[in-house]
Image (cartoon, rainbow, N blue to C red; front, side, top):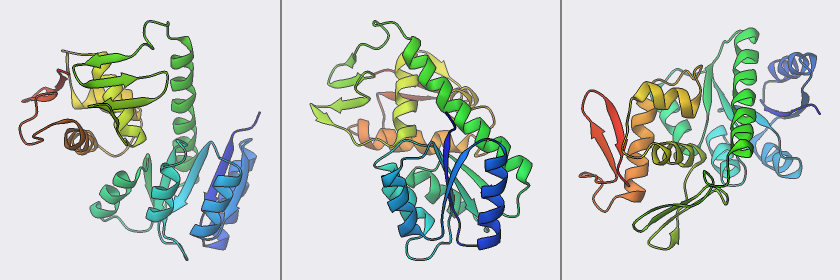
Length: 234
């Protein structure tokens, strides 16, 4: 069954070019010209991946990403005409998985799409192949991670984690007590071909600490190992 891609781009020529090339690769493609239409289409037929321009009429790409990320876990690749680092940080905050700066080559875009879809397939296969033991709840005092339900509880309260925050926390917890480098975390959680750099890991660690730690400035659950990476102590 063909994987479904939603293209959200207000520029007609680029929207049609993207659609044409993705269809040639065997994907099922739908396209939206503005942010509101994109949200409606994604809710009606959830895509496997979203290509999302930032500068959109009605709702900009950041707001579309924020809304859809609350409802679905499909990879979101943001397309931007700007190279500002602030754009990338804001995009990560609202849940984007990858970035492409215009102008980009169609070969690179198709490679990014393929890589994100492959990463999702591998994650699904890994979860399906895990033994019952590995999908049991992981409990660290008042912190409970439930891979089966895809949920995390702290003090009995369900935490609202972004998809990448959740994946990062699960990976850290599965390697409890082991120091993991930024490059290792980047490769295992984001994929080897992610272009965001190791700063992405630091940003997500900071967000996790804000939600997990009593005093984020002096963390006791996720420890920084100077010059080496991070270690999860529970």
